[in-house]
Amino acid sequence: MIGFTGSPLDRADHLRADPERVAALARAPGSLMAKLTLLDPVLDEDGRLAWVEPEGEPLAFLGFINGIARFALLSGERGAARRTSGLSALLDRMPPDEAATYALARSLVDWHARHGFCATCGGKTHPIRAGWARACAACGAEHFPRTDSVVIMLAEHGGDVLLGRQPAFPPGRYSALAGFLEPGEAIEEAVARELKEEAGVVATHVRYVASQPWPFPSSLMIGCIATVADRHITVDRTELEDARWFSRAALAAAMAGAPDAAFGVPPPYAIAHSLMAAWLAGQ
Image (cartoon, rainbow, N blue to C red):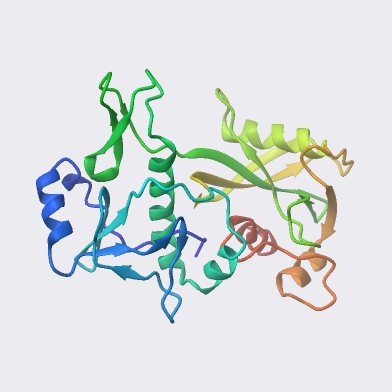
């Protein structure tokens, strides 16, 4: 399963326009609220997301799991939109379905914390639709949580794969290249542009593999594999610290965590890890 997918939540969209029903659910015995420390999850001993009785205002209605209403507190306190130093260890402990539910709660809470004012007139906004939108008290404009589209891709040529590393990566880690889609751009065009800009390689064919919600703060990662015309690399040093070609055997060793692996790979919850597994499998 690709990271941050597979949540069992029934989002119950039909209830979002019924504030009285949602308020009643928040007060009902057995309803639960995700326990977060700012934006980080609080886990129980099994690595599952901790849930507590709903309290505080405003609350966002996430949906139902096993018939139980689930909420998140929109506290207004802004945590770090980027990952904290301890978050990776927490995510490694979480079952995939739990991580997916957490990703939703994190993205929604963070969006509200960053959108207290109207992008149309600058007036103050407040949550509506059970926490799935905000309305401006001054001009009446409604704003909805946004998802930023990102292409993330492997480049292949002659049986080898092109990977890069950013200075912020842990020592020795290499990963897929990535970048935001720009206005008026198709997925395939964005893949080709990013590969050309970051590594100087020319894509001749692009195939889609899979997608992933990425809650840092709220993106949709669109995973692709591109065949490129040649192996000549020109690294954009403003984006990457390094980029190089790796053989299939080298990637297999890195994915297996072999002691003599030439490099490290991203964690299993990252779609880059899933792309590497798909490439090794010939997909």
